Image (cartoon, rainbow, N blue to C red):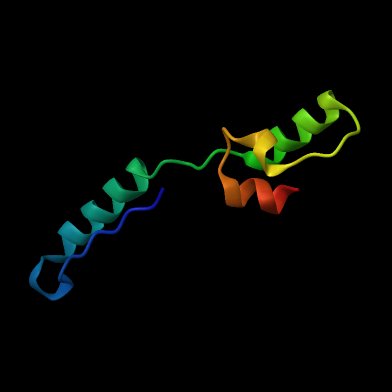
Length: 67
């Protein structure tokens, strides 16, 4: 999930920019590691035809790239 904050930079004091960047860096959620999850399921599930629907609980694009 991404977020976007629009701030007009030329009207704010410099220290405020540093504070905003620090807060944004702290609150950014780290995306789940999809590749290890996909690999682990495939190793446990054995040799078969794996489809994107087998990984419904994971982000679609990340699973597609991992497969």
